[in-house]
Length: 459
Image (cartoon, rainbow, N blue to C red; front, side, top):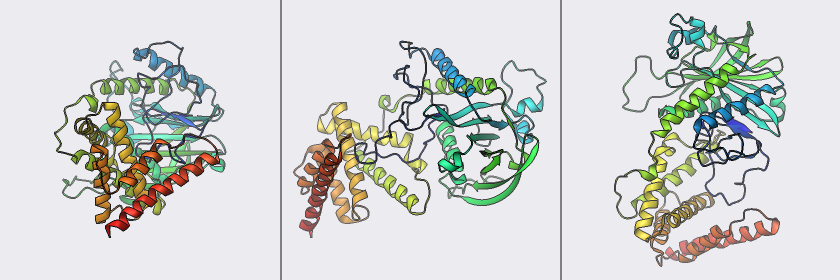
């Protein structure tokens, strides 16, 4: 069970066709506490600890019936749950020690009420917090802590993740490139700063990180983002993000940082997690206050759109997402959406299409959401199963007919394919045996065959 205070997925790809093969979450799979997410206000507070959660959910723990309207209780419950989990850790957990030099030079200002003569070592640990952990079947798999200025894209900021002994023998640990991209995702999601989709200018370095007072050799992957064309040139260019992996007494430890030189990082085992737990709670409160000021896209006044342009823009984004994911898979990278295709921009495109669907098709919001969802999955699935949808005139015609059928139920030339998709989407299995999946396969073949017939008739 993974617990991270803001969804780590960031842009790690998640399929839209939630009813098709390979899309269902594995029962009893790992669940994580997401960095800075906090539990949604409408989520029950008495979930079992190992229940798989979706990417927007978190794991509140508390007595049944406790009101979700009381965030102080929710944060206290989370803190206590994390405290119990970490107390049961059967392996050492590492974090940055107070001796890390560069953090003291540019760390955030001491918290209100801190002594005026706070030492540089104390300042170096400003922002120390539990960032994430993952459990599976009641067993703690890894723990991640952070320190530094999480509010600044310049840093200094460091995360340290400790895996339980033998983790590298039973699972594939993230590549260093993925750790860098996860950190860039964090900055994008928390601060709204898009540092570009990697890789940028990459260097492989060898550094020494001190662990419990002893220098330890570590290979470091450094990635400096490439500025967008036309962007103003900074004196030293964009700041790099780096990540390294080292072995400590049979444990695998990964370190990721920005605004701090890897050679100046000092690690030590954490004997008392109270500082980290309190830091986590304060960060959760901070982000909850920020989000309370955020107006949901459903409640905003959006720029006016004409006709079916909102539907077309949403489909264009969907196709771009699929193309980006496929390109990353082909070169062996972890699939993740480019940052410009997610978050606020995507939510606005979706909401605009839903509103136009409601207006043009005279549908309720629930009906419009269902129609737009089916439309997006139709085009997305067709782009995955054919070679002609993207970049061809017949692909443009197919998209236009999908849109017109979605909005007006028009008698388009591809009507048999539209109806075949409706049946395929409506009867998508949520489970079942081999017979159910065979029926689904046949239905998909009929749908694709209808599109081929449409193509043949156009020639």
